[in-house]
Length: 170
Image 1 (tube, rainbow, N blue to C red):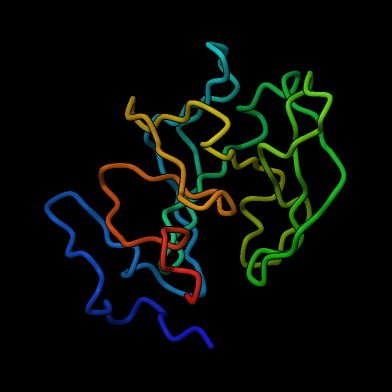
Image 2 (cartoon, rainbow, N blue to C red; image 1 turned 135 degrees about the vertical axis):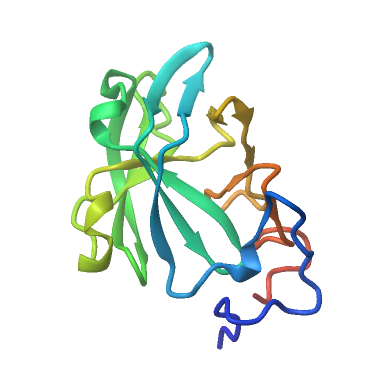
């Protein structure tokens, strides 16, 4: 049973400095917040998405995931592929691959019919930063460790975060 819900930072959590956030202060269930900073997603020098109306999902122990409105995404570079996963909070996720990738590897995801609490991200896309050059106000995003989750690590985030070595029991 998950015991961390953002009410009290565990002893092993790093203390955030000025201008930083601890993932251990994020709530569970997650919180959806609007982010008006410039968020860009690039692939091989080509702009895939750009917005100042992103949604950030904040959940205990994870770096934020960013959802970009579909209207701000160049959908000619992506294709919806088969396969789904389920989030207990947001609902069923659909996956997107690069349009010219014959493997059909999921590099982004969306919630086409999210649970009511996350209606604001209906159809918005979130990108795995391991497959793209993602930026927030020009800062290059680092992918969440472990390869499974799609969190966006920046200098403003302190952990440790889910996915790092030794965090499998979280």
